Image 1 (cartoon, rainbow, N blue to C red):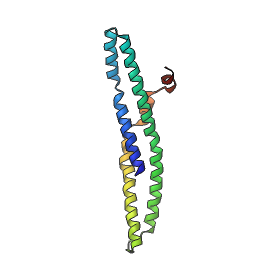
Image 2: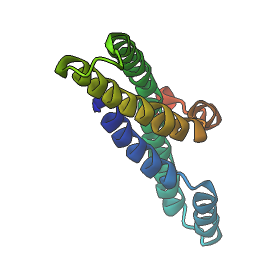
Image 3: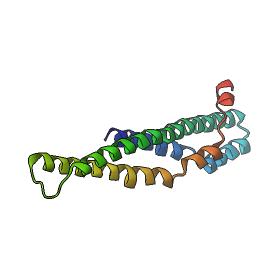
Image 4: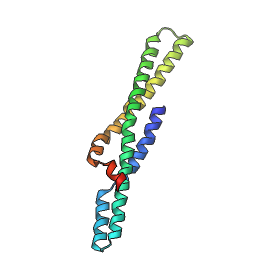
Amino acid sequence: MAARAEMEERWSEFISAKSKVNVPQFTKRIEQAWANGDNEKVEQIRQERKNAEARFFVAATRYQAGMEMVAEADATLQAAFDKAAAFIDEKDLSVKSVKAMTHALGIWHWLGELRIYIVPKYNSHNVPALLEDLAFDADSYLNS
């Protein structure tokens, strides 16, 4: 549950930051400022774009790093599911057996949340490719 909640938070940050990196909009604004001879405005827009790219870089990097947490949670849940499933005897309807069945169902649900919801959503955005395309240079950003 914690991994899913954390990834939802990271996804929200990622989507918000991604929406702010609108290159055509920045380009249009810079062209308008150049056409008006407003070099100060050009520099302001350029800085806004750099800041948007920096925010996107951080959010995308955090989102990508969260997949390690998801992989760990998946492995832990799978091990717990295997253990609960091994304990279950469908003919034994004792409280202990029904508890194991209930735990197995709960684990199965959270595995589904990770495998069917979180991972495909992450994969649909191809975060590694977005980061590569961004080619963000943190040193240049910090030194300018």
